[in-house]
Length: 221
Image 1 (cartoon, rainbow, N blue to C red):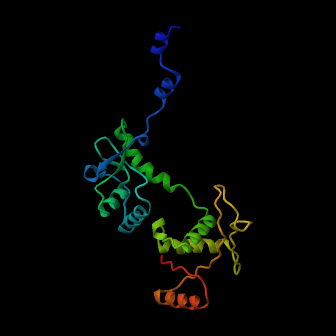
Image 2 (image 1 turned 90 degrees about the vertical axis):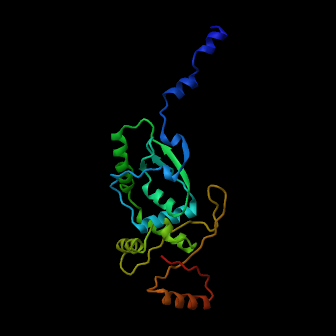
Image 3 (image 1 turned 90 degrees about the horizontal axis):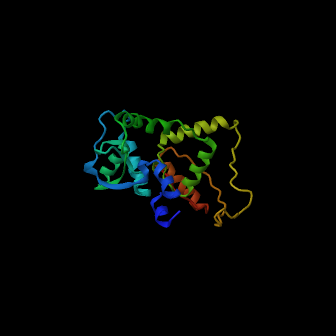
């Protein structure tokens, strides 16, 4: 085959690219907030407390999930994040556009995006261990989306898994200062979380333990 004829044929890579689907996440743009239109029939509601949690998350990690919008700017997924962004005074945010979606597809995804996330379940023991470690590091639970009631409910679930009077131990590692897969070394730490009835008891407990020489971190949830 001649060189000129070969140049006229699509390469294997070009043919492969031509059949790959184009996803909204393939292209993220930055849009002004005023261009976004809330979907009037969105069945998912967002309380002030939840929006505040989203704001705290944004302040900690920034904007990590772009808003999904239709081509005219109507919000398909991300209403709560838009409310939080407005409260934080953001002028523009990342969006991805659902190009070519039918009206039915857009309406259906408004529901699917919320419902699919609710269908997962927590491994209660692993979640409890992670939250305990993060609390010892001073990480506030509300940034993670957990309220005080959530933590009390989690405690009840843990108690139901633990025999009466027994102490449940979570083993982190068999080797002290064992290297992780990425080569870093972590020193094992042990801690006890004390649940106080109010701020005054928290202060009294803190002072008493501090006098005994313990290293302390104060956590309020």
